Image (tube, rainbow, N blue to C red; front, side, top):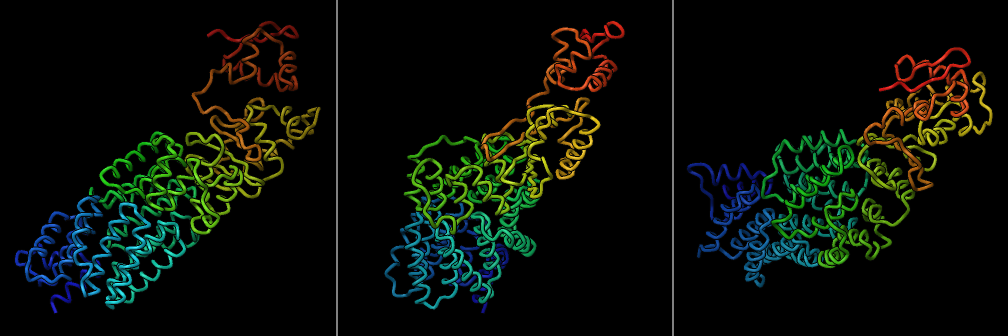
Length: 577
């Protein structure tokens, strides 16, 4: 009864409880047949050296059956793979092959499951697929439900990574239902979290994934791995949907649960998510630093799958941590047979993804596709991936303030906060196009936007005011991006306007340090050449003399210019510094 209880506790994912009862207590003891459960709990909690010592003890015990030895070695392989110690994992997997001919299918299950797991972790996906199929077959022959659960779980991961995303998600769903039927809640939550993470990272079921991940985060209080993973995926979802602030809040929640140093995959995944957020709301340098952290986390192992994903995100974010290397991309795609590695190969100029890619992974199909920026952004907007828009516009720059015209709608991006405006007031496109070229007088706006040759303040000022007011109302909290100036209107410094039909930015106010006043104000620039009368300035600026006088009086009041003379002989002179 004691042994059966310990196994049930282990298979429910309660590893701390297993160790408290059978390993860490002063009088702790366990039945010899339960040794694999203790090895597994030690391995899965990062206590790998203790796990290996106990696994070796089991192997040296002359009374231990082949089944117990193979099972203990399997869980040692699990711990070594999670710790990135792949050479040691391979050695034990090969050693376990001596039991491949055992008469007991349960023993054979642990042999082939260990081989499949090792191959999966080092990115040999094609070969992992074959071994996982053999492991599942042995578990079914043995009527070993727990083994069947483990085999389905791993096989689902293998299929997704290989690019058979639909099939892999179906297998993971089967595994999740089996875990629930067996009462293994810890396993069920972990599998659900993995399934949702794949749907998230491949851009599937946008409406459902976020709420499901939130439920996992709420329900996983006792499962630190699932809890941390759910918050990381919610952070990725926030970045993808154009809400970097919400993404950072989720990532902070994930960081509350320390990632073990041995969990290089978890640390790399966290760093890549941080890089995406930094690229949207901070800077290219911070994004590059985060990707470099991910690179260092992967240095200890040979995880080709995550390496390919890391390089692919480097391409998407434009961080240039890895130089383009088509040979390397082709090698990763060939060795792993992984979907993201094939996407990287396509990005680096190799063979394109197949025609079924969009149905398997809408997100990576978009990121690795060769459609025009306008077409790719249209897909991103339909999917709700607003966070990708600043990355997909031509000549992507540091995070800032962008207004992007996509077909008949407008995307406004402000340091990681991206909104999609689908209903635009009349003349919005023309107004922003004019203002993106610099400050515009009312007369210039009437000429450029409404194509009226002669400006009449009494007829046209109300038209301009109404159009600007409607545009500001449409921009909502970003209304102050359009500022009123003494001469007319202008965009705030650093705002860039992009028209995707032209596929190039049409213009933008500088995001560099503010220029000198003479460069900012056309009147000051003209007076820097020579003193001028108000009528001369009005003619040069193409405004009415009354407008020019109002601006001149304001500049005189600030001390920027002085008056020289009286009456019609009055000239305006640039003040000496």
